[in-house]
Amino acid sequence: MAGISGRAATTALILLVPLPLGLRCFPSHTYIPPISQEMSSTVALSALLAAAAALSGANAQSSSTSVAPLAAQTYAYADLPYQVEPYGGERGNQVGYNKCNSTTENQDSLCQTLIANAIDDFCLWSSPKENETIGDTEAYEVAWCSKKGHGARAMPDGTLQGVSVIRTPDYVMYAGFLDQVQVNLAADDYGGELDPHGADLMGNPMGGMVYSNQYPKGNTDNNTLTQVVEWKQFIGGNQFCLMICDPSKTDANNVGLCENRYDEVGISYNCPNSAQKGKYEVCDGDSMSPIGQYVSNGVTTTWTQPWSGSWTVPYTATVPSSSNCRTFASTDLYTAGVKPTVSASGSAAGATATGTGSKGSKAGSSAGASATGSGSDASGASHVVVSGFATVLGLAAALAFLA
Ligand SMILES: *[C@@H]1O[C@H](CO)[C@@H](O)[C@H](O)[C@H]1NC(C)=O
Ligand SMILES: *[C@@H]1O[C@H](CO)[C@@H](O)[C@H](O)[C@H]1NC(C)=O
Ligand SMILES: *[C@@H]1O[C@H](CO)[C@@H](O)[C@H](O)[C@H]1NC(C)=O
Image 1 (cartoon, helix red, strand yellow):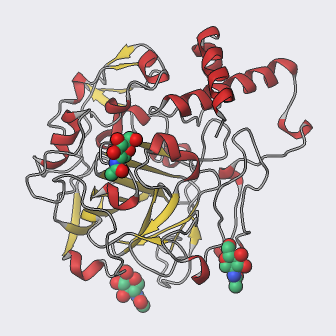
Image 2 (cartoon, rainbow, N blue to C red; image 1 turned 90 degrees about the horizontal axis):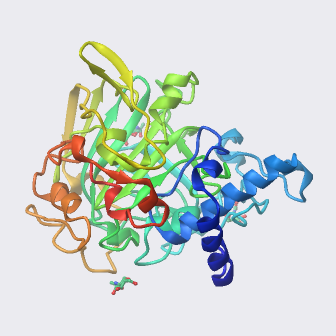
């Protein structure tokens, strides 16, 4: 993180440099954090550095550090180094580590290797520090796991409050509800999106690696973990979604389902699902349509999230059909046995939760009251309006999950 003076300097630069120019320098997989001024400033600085490098003809190899894009790094789980990104890029070194084992398994763990195996055995990225926002901590999120054995932190009892796992031909998606203060998020944080790319291609979190025993497809040995290269996670507003895309499918469409350029439109578009509070189920399902793609008057059209200006989403996301659902009780699934150390987030634990935040009450109420999950679109997708300018200045945090 930049120091105070550095932050002030980058803020000043933002005001001087027309942002769209900088943004054009980003590669296609670019994450623009929608959340805080601090992180926006950091990324804007990255844009400026990238622009400067492009203008001068410099490249990363010519500096003293050589930063390999996170998504280009492949390791067998057993061969993971202490850190996959010890290089020190624009945002500094990876904060945690990837080699996670019984000595690193505690509630202070900085394990940055996430496992997503099954409804009773998956982790989510969240903050290592209490009462934080995703916007402030996205560079150094750590793994919080529903089950012990991965060298990471355990989600305290009662963290997960409804989980839908959908296994599709192209991805496995974990979506649902949680008491996010149990994983160190501020009660009113509407969160954001994490993925293995980011403006500097080092990922958010930097160095975050993901593995699953669900791949290669048909694998029956629960102890065999395969790296998942393309994934995305949304967390905030007491909801989450983690999508892991089949690593054997490298075509543009499959990579596209783990698309991370639609960060502003939230879970219902990025992870259409029908998760419900208090319900824990695993289903087979069809893959979602690529985000942004919709049919209007019989014509398939692709909408792209703009980087600036005011806009509305021209379509409503639909939840793909699912079948073969098996339902579980939460007490059958979550047995890590770590007691909560912070009190529950507002009234979110109750069936009639109305959300926990003071800002973005729309997202809060849709999360709890309807109990139809983040996939329901009662909030009216076509009314989402995002101001790119506000996003850049970090004023649009509450918009991230409006959809
Ligand atoms: C356990 O993980 C830690 C942190 O990555 C590492 O320093 C240590 O060498 C590991 N222990 C074993 C036995 O691999
Ligand atoms: C969390 O942080 C906010 C803002 O810094 C503060 O107002 C609030 O009291 C904190 N909450 C807890 C539970 O520490
Ligand atoms: C593998 O994991 C699944 C899901 O957690 C579980 O139902 C199954 O019993 C496990 N298989 C073995 C052989 O342990």
